[in-house]
Amino acid sequence: MNGSSNGRGRRIVLWRHGQTAWNVERRFQGTTDIELTGTGVAQARRAARLLTALEPQAIVASDLRRAADTAAELAVLCGLEVTHDAGLRETFAGSWQGLTHEEIVGRYGEQYARWKRGEAVRRGGGELETEVADRAAPVVMSHADKLSDGGTLVVVSHGGTIRTTIGRLLGLDAHHWEALGGLSNCCWSVLSEGVRGWRLTEHNAGTLPEPVLGDDT
Image (tube, rainbow, N blue to C red; front, side):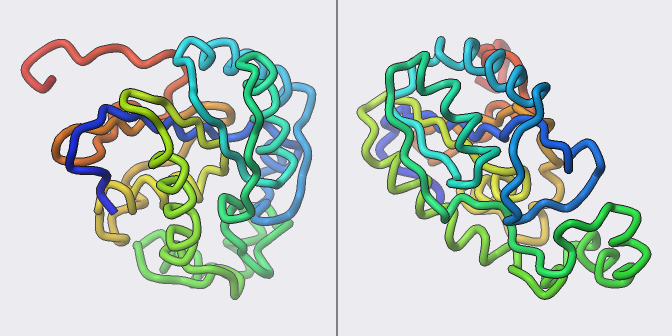
């Protein structure tokens, strides 16, 4: 799933939700429906003011409150309706959900180590990362395919889901998805479409995309 070959110049902005209390406590959220903190709301409002400059044509978001409320801040500025889709939820991680990082390492150390080595692991008995990509990437592409030439889609989702979706859309082997690194709260990554498919042009950004000036344009 590596984009269109016709070079329509579309752009996908994958935006992570704002801060939650569980983020601060380093608790694995997964599909648990946690709301934004006051700081998270402020992050969303600041980021939304920046992202309006990209003149998005459409916004699609996870239906979990932390993503839906983040998306709402951009929607009100752009005058757009948000489409909510459960396919964009964070990875379901079973017994890991609600545990702190230290608790996960202490109780599931070997499973955690295997995951970090890039092995296919059902963390806490939950979803494989490839299964997350199987449900999320088609949602993103179905909305991107509705864009006009040069149009921008904003996808508001979760760190793990965004990483796996980027990996799938770039055609990377799942073993290498972890190399993309995580996203900070309310930061985003940008996929831009060229004649050979999608390219990652911004990652974990908190400012508007800048043109690439140099030999790799």
